[in-house]
Amino acid sequence: MSGLLRGLGWVERQLSSTGNIHLLHAYTRGRHQVKEGRKVSMSTERASIETLWQFSSPKTLGRRINGVTFCRTSPWLVVATYGALGFTGTIEGSLVGWNVKRIPQPELWLSLPGPATVVSSCPGAPQLCCVALLDGTLHVYQLDTSPPQLVMDTSVSVDKHCSPVWAVEWRDSQVVSSSATKKTLTPSGDRPPSFRRLVIDMQGTPTSGSEIAYVLVSSSEDGTVKEWIFIKGTILCCTTLLNVRLPLWLSLRISGGLEEVLRRSCMAGDGSKGGGVDVGGLPLPQKVPATSMHFRPGDKTTYLVGTTAGDVLLCRTFERERVGGVYEGHTALVTRVAWRSAGEDANSIFLSAALDDTIRVWYIDKPAPICVLKLVETVSSGYVDACWCPWYGNLIAGVHGGGLHLWDISLSTHTPILIQPHQGATCVTFSPHTRNVVVGDAEGRLTVFHLEGLEISASIFLKYSTKISKLAKIGVIPVD
Image (cartoon, rainbow, N blue to C red; front, side, top):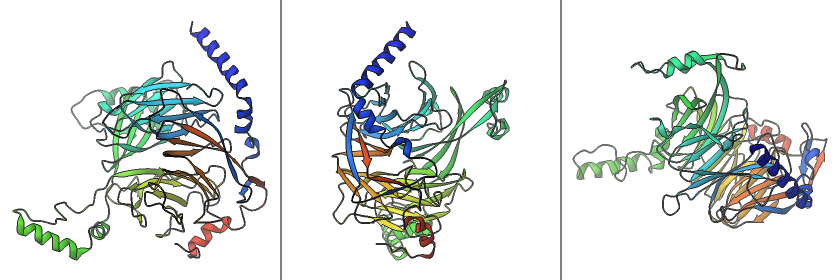
């Protein structure tokens, strides 16, 4: 019976793809031209955007899309998380997988116990998918089983986040000894042994008597960044990598300066028994919620954290009580941080998007942004998400409540090359395989846009963009 159902599903996909063959041709247009080592340029005169289709069904309409990602091994599969960002009304969430070859109906539907905030596919094991929930729980599902199997659940862990999780990232998996794992899981009354004693080969492959341990890092509004190490069905350990705290000088500045802090402290001391350093009845804002996170490409120890205070923190896994750097400039909550994924100095340039209507591009060694992307008019609700293009290092997509902006940082910092109205847009991602961008919205619609006007060139990476990092180092690029 299971074989018959799989066969019928295959026939249905073939019929569906045949009926939408013209859309598939448009979707894959230019796919084989984007190759490693080739340079892509964009012209403001020729650039255009075309709406191909929307992924939606009666079950998803009206449900807010909070996160979307492409399957890393297939250009056809898109996974999105749904759910209202609140605990009133409908509190269920869902994980939905869409197949480009089967547009009208979802390929995967998985009900979740609460609204889902973010989704991340494992690079080394694409069948594994991590979903973060609004209550701070992490679920990892194995999607190649029917039905999908829950292989990790942090709701039973004492180390569970106590606030919403807004960023999840997979790290390199490790090979551990099965016998050592069993000993670790046996209660002994002592402190749990270090996970490092279980590791056989950090880069090895599983053999008899060993298992693969997967590593996840999550950041939450509770002000912590945590690392989870698990085998299928069991959490081996959880480590708090960072308590997100602002440096004292920055806390003082946010509070209005030292004189203002002392003045309020005296006022609080006169009217209360305890006294102490107090700002309007609250302590100095040292610990802040983490709203976004991204590890530096090629570096296992360095990562960025965005905060509700508008600051971006440069952190390292071996420094758990302090930060390596602070990037100031945003005046509102930071919704996204992301390292550049293509082009020169990809691991030294990053972006940050915030609700202050700006996207800022930074160089790791400079405290000020090398450019600020901002429209002359006010952006509806600020930028709620942004990402780099994986096959063109100067292209940035940002979404706000009114639509999609595509910026080419080599051409302009005040005028996007493309503006696509899209009411209620909430998240955005580029396809790593084709020239398409996907936008989710508050009404449960996942819209696929195709980009035109890209030119393949074997020459330099745009006349000015190849020098962006070098100019940034010497401070030539002006900041608005």
